[in-house]
Image (spheres, rainbow, N blue to C red):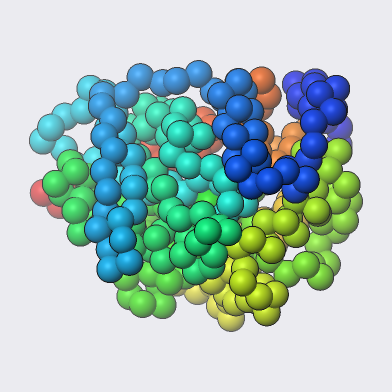
Length: 322
């Protein structure tokens, strides 16, 4: 297993900058650094029909969302809807850092994409992000028709922290008999928040030379979780759920040089053991976050197409009752 050339050049460029690691920065500067990285390295923008920012009302305040509609749609056909939760360790990222990714899924998957700007820690620690994520799913289900979508064709997904929220939302929906979910897309998800994790990739890639470090992980945890005991809450570490039975079909994507690789694989294996229709793809030659850096890491574009194809297949309106 070796790094591909694009990934190696990306890591070399970060090393040459000699910039502080994420966990060494004040949170405001870390957020700006992520925005700068994605602005430079993101996949080029895809053409969509229209984009609209809205705010979802809740008992605790509004949740901002951004909605994308694909071009060339048939107004008589209800489209599938992809509810997307961005990555960023629960403390960074927003609808802007994942704007081009959202446009890509919309254009190439031929689905409505709803990007959720859930509340971030440390200003809003756990369970704020979980509450927002599930509330957004419920709102989408109830309002699917007015959006031009089909409530029976709703998927959830996201990268890293967004993958965690996607897995958690699926478990909540199952346990509360909430909205049916047609597909969950878990992109290099963090599914175990426990710091004593025994996954080999956690120690193998701990130092940060492959972008994400153990210190970054601990930094995220300290801001997201008010107390360390919450690491073992299934709404934080969904892999600790007693059973995966009854969860939606899944696509799990990992990266070969990612500290989170092994837990993503383990979550996929647990889904399969629970009778879930799940598929798994590890992009062996690259790192955590590679799909957000698809402008420089070419295998990231392959990953984006993999997700778009899965969405197109799972959320096809063919066969739905009129």
